[in-house]
Length: 347
Image (cartoon, rainbow, N blue to C red; front, side, top):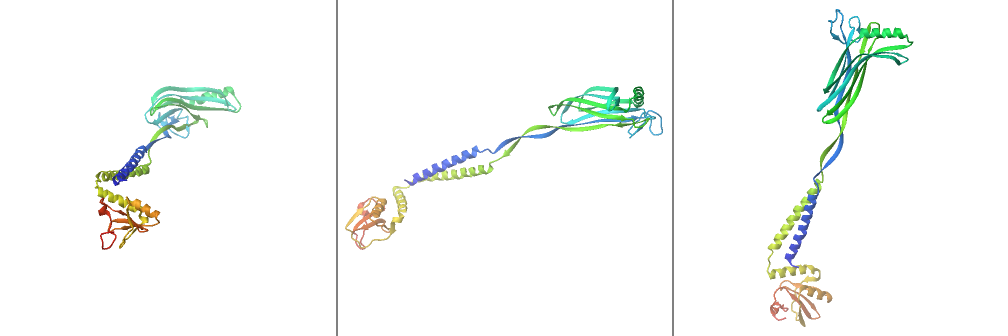
């Protein structure tokens, strides 16, 4: 096998390794998209039911017509009250329609079961946007008198009476482009703890509405594998190009090729070859071997070792007076024959 052929084989092998590394490097993804779900706040609503007393009579404390917030109101100076119902939604791109009502009613019950329920005042409206506020003015003195008249007429034992304020809202529309809908009820009251006095108890609520969103995340991966195959590609390519360059540029003459092949062969049979020099020997016969391998194989068969005379460039074996030899280089038989005697040119 020639040296040039060896370089070509090396080139082909590392070219294939380089192509394999490139394929693996290209096939491995640098990132992938991970899909997941998460809960996010879509919108928050808050609602309030509240009330204030209205100063209806002259007094030294507040001007007439003013709204005041007190823990208890005397009907002698504040016969009327204003109750309100507000509801607001916060979020992105809120576009809702609100249908609501604010009702004030009074009742009489026996054993916690209502016998009479009457609506005193009612307000209904529809609007769009982010929220609303609804208000009603109620004459507390008038409602109190109506309850008294009914109670005197019915004369129920263990009877209970009261005034309720109820706000109901139903909404629908979109928030952040998503369809939403809901309804909520708020309940307050107006208490009559003592004769001629009243208190207002409101209601406040809030809630956050959530939604589930699908999100995508780019995850980088296989960075070590890609580096490994990239290095393999670079190294394989470098070796392949070097082998190709050397193989194409290798143009030895015949003598150089023979010498290189002989060196490779000598290296292969090195354990059966010794270095030495044969002097003052006249053989019975001389046998010229065609190749070094033929000489070494003959030596092995004769249970002998081949000797390499580096000075004369000859490999030889002496067995039973026969001189077996292989001359390095040269095709002229006369020139090739070695001189075996020290002072004579004849063997």
